[in-house]
Image (cartoon, rainbow, N blue to C red; front, side, top):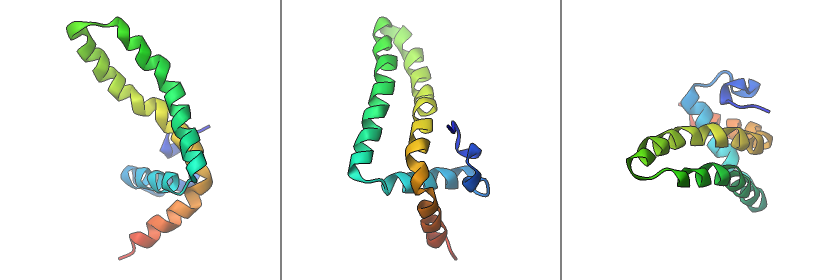
Length: 101
């Protein structure tokens, strides 16, 4: 399982923003059922995390929400990478075709 886009061999030649764009393209090529499964998996992963934020009240909630916002991509990116991997080759080809001068 890959936790970062830099760990994927197919994407080593690209810059970070390009890698993110390619992953978005790969995810856009998923069929509807797979997109729903991805969203449900993300929801199941994040629900306990955000439910635990109920403990904090008032101004204490502000820094905790800031940290939660920073952690959100760390939790969801590996899941998105796993779902997008089968479509990476197609997304790379589409990305290269759209960025030709």
